[in-house]
Image 1 (tube, rainbow over the protein chains, first blue to last red):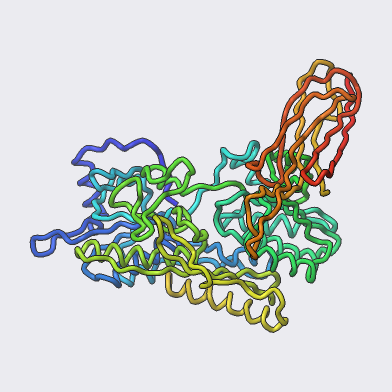
Image 2 (cartoon, chains in turn yellow, red):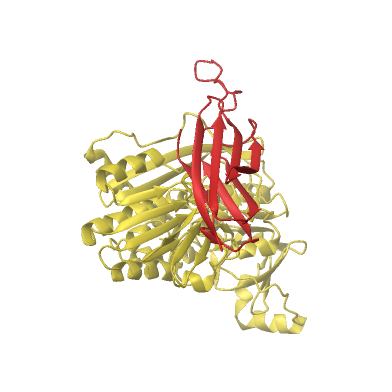
Length: 429
Length: 106
């Protein structure tokens, strides 16, 4: 994700012009028949940003769209828990931007240093600037290294969070592989809101699967800052059947909230005790990605309030926020939700640029979780704007049944795979 | 009743200010809710929490229906002498849950 330097680069007009001529001239929206072509900049090339950029082009080919993403390769979070459990290579999580480019989107492999909302201009690390008519921020999350005493970037190299897929995912994988049979794995889950609400519980399940099959004398403790969680009854029933005695879930009311980390001893301190881990996975509190904070679209919660119809920021005009960074009411922070929001946002922006009245839409989310390689469960929801928030429509969604034959769980595990193939092909293919 | 959790230092210097944490799993039913049939759900909250240090009350609190479920309390006191800290939670049904912790003062 683009990082924030906080300082606005002072570059002379000449220097900017020079760098523009040197290679980013194509980024500027060229005039068409004397009238400037509408230009939309999308920052962040994850599920939200890449979807939005493509959809904008599809909605109105006359709009110039630039996707700003400094990384040449995207590493997807969904299914990264299977990588941690050794069920899947990390390469299966990698996606490039060739498909996005072929869809007519300009890719700018740049780092954003500042956003000038009044001038509607984005400033890049190399001194270049780009004007926009509308700006879409899809920066995902950042780990809050200031929120949990003792948990900083150095500690994360010892006790990985693995909540952004990539090097952290592989680090946790290697630690699990290196652990002796009989070891104790400790996971900690944060309070709401955070990326992927069922994620910590899917991860606990798949690590338990690895332990059960490869290191059966080991144990997994899941310390939680909450008393309830997504798909809880399904997870707990599955744990009882598949991993009896292996997973111990400690809720908030059982003293599960972690208040301090000691990386030197790999200890997680709770309000009522401490846990020494052989492998520790600390999933810490999070906030919107740095570029959202820099743009001034995040509020005191660290997340971005938005208009639920257009996803336009409630704090800064002409900037839209989608995906995990947005406060999307009842919608969870998931890849599916990010993809759905991106499509609505793109259509709304196209309508706004054309001066049309945007039409009302509903948004859908589905989250699959694997409890074992052949055991999938899901939750689905339908959402619509109501009273200024995205609200869940009652009786429209649902979760997998609590009682179901093995064939149904197996089918859901297959659907999960199919979903991932479908969404990644749509967004990056 | 259910599980109560306490966290006190096992050992402290005489005169040291120590932090004490206590939490109990309890529904804290407000009495303002109705069930699916529309009948009022009777109030059942912990209305009194008390902590004794060797039979001397050092901290007490009255709770009201606005308290959330599983109330968590943290307070501090001065370590005076080796002894026993006794905690008691009393709810509207008259159930009293107790817990104790020993402290050594050096």
